[in-house]
Image 1: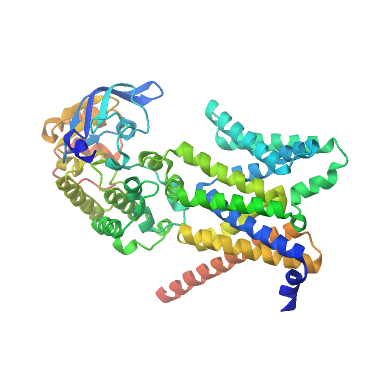
Image 2: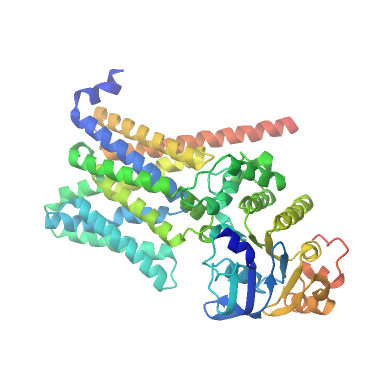
Length: 265
Length: 283
């Protein structure tokens, strides 16, 4: 089974329409994501990034066209193969669980209902927390951690799954500069391991730079291709400028090639 | 020392009450922990009260109350699911509607017959001193089932409490496991009402688990604390009720609630103390 998975592409789409309850949010999406590659989805809030990610992990149905994950329709894929980081974890603040318990959940899709956790799992969990620099927070209750620390814990959970496809929605939200650096290193390590990554981001300068492929979304596919191909001032204006002028993302328009540090607001 | 032991060593009915109460405490600890983790307090409350018409009809038809309670909770859960899925109303509106509807229906049925008034008190407050061996065995079986469900479903229940979307992506159907959790809560209510009554079973679901949630850092320890507080409440409640001739199940629930507030107050004083200390250190 696992052998078969590695032979097929992690994600392929053809004339894919995505959206909610028959309302198409983004039509006609075409891209492929190969093994060990990364694709960045870039767009404003409401541009369709999260919708695409949710469709890929099988949370919402495909509205039209074709989507294959490791050669299978979403929802039919071996669950251990996909690790998903969603945007909201509101209940994490109430639960009496420690940080390490949250990271441990990353092993659940691999182990299923019954599978016993062994020392190898413990090592993977520890390693994942170390990668995100939160190994010293392992015993702390999650509800006592700051937003940025929680985000690092959630990312550790994703890393602990050792999945073939990582689907990340705003992974750098709330992270400080150090956290972002660790996150980018972790992405590189995951790609070297052979994992593929699809992430939604505002972080044009840093994150898109490590991706092999960039999709600019604004309720349609504005551009799709390599970073240098699609990151033109015209495309970025179409993606960001019109939709929410005045947002802090405006710095994108001022330095579209992105070698400067993004301004902090 | 005698006042703590003699009531149980000399009265078989007290021992039976203690056993039944401990089984209620264990079942309620497990169901209550997940009620608090998943934020299902309102549905727990509604289930506890919504079984009333079922029990009343069962008494009218002369069949075991537990069967009526099971039917009542099935109607509750079914109705809530139907309204939530087929309308744009949120689940708390659906729960509230079914809650008052079923409670009123229960009272209407009960009010038809004057011989019911004694039964009504028993339904609402339980009859812990009149628990039969058969009920204890039924309760034991139910408690084992509840422990079994909680053990088997720990991972999906945890994911569901953490984030239902991540449960789904991880391959655990949120619908199936949510319904299993509701079944576990309903089973607890159904088998516990004879002992502590429909009004007070909710107290046993919420109060010990609330105390556990204040103290615990992890779910396993939360369940352990909750069981401990539940058993202490049962024991102390029975003892107080025996010596002071007070209503037993209400005494048990009251002890459970008092434990919660004691922990809450001590914890708050300690936190304030720590804040004050750090302020003086840094000041």
